[in-house]
Image (tube, rainbow, N blue to C red; front, side, top):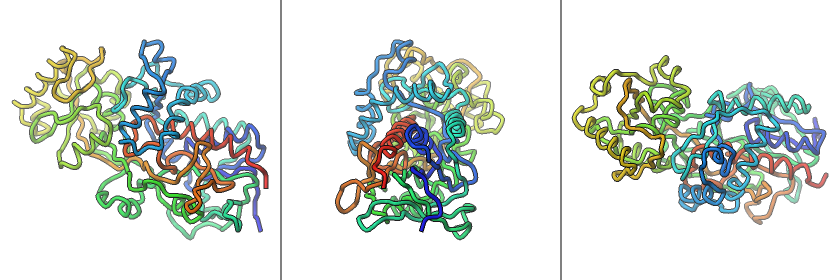
Length: 466
């Protein structure tokens, strides 16, 4: 009946899947990670490497007062209270513990400065030294090799194999699968003696499926995700009895560049420089229209839903943390100017209102209060006045699926009919739903994936053997 057997079978090789594998391996000698693409890592490897942690060592060094309670409050506020509060609380409470795990056990290296991302009350975001999620996935893959955990590529999940009571016994896959050719590869049945952990991420690139969930997201709206971010594993989970949660809640990233495909290098420029240290203006009017440090939903609503063409502007002082600046300039994603007048002319922004916008903004920064839009004014935020000046043309792109399948605090998947756990079935990361509610805060995704990946791995390894 079975072609292969392992204690733990993990589907997906991003943050959640690798964290689950490393945790499960502490107890189980037989753990395998199955990945449908030709390279490991998925969206995790191409993400910005941003990790939110409340009460972290860097916050202590910088005298920043933070707590899991404040982080949870921020999550619930951005999520419009659509969040599962128990799951959200676990992410906040285990955020610093999990960050330290990446440093102490995996050797992940982070910059020694914190970023203040939109929707967060205080700076609490760490960034990998290479400004990429690969700064985390690579050490995780190295550790998997050291622990003898195979990462089997080109292996597509087809369906979950269950018994008469609905317990997950294993999976049917296609070995040798070549994305996106559905019929490629050879069918194999793999038994999980203890449990299967699903960690395949979201479906932002599945244009047909996402439009069914949210008709606003037409096919001409781009995505920041890798090509394999599709819905077939979610559909397989639902067929196996998993409960779908909030599938229509799909987040767009408001900081993506109009002048490159995907996540690119411009997104990190916007997040680390343009939004926190610059202004966001309407190209047609030359005026600000939103608090640049609002959460992503508020920013997208102010940009996409009004049809504005948006431009972020920052000066030489404001780009000091923009680690992708060189690549942005080389690719033409960010443009550099000697004066605001030159920036205005090239971007076809009306000069007089733009100069007035910057004057009012600079005055607000000097006073320490943004009376127009309520942007936080930390001590390191300086007026926009030192040339050269930089601009990036922005467009919203589909970025993250807040919806997915329902899990409990132990990362066990819950059944759609009984609302009880499905034996032998765990999940973690973006494939799960409810943690972030209506809008995920930037840098909370990696934290979520690592926290619940470890929880899933630990609990799956303790699942009673069949």
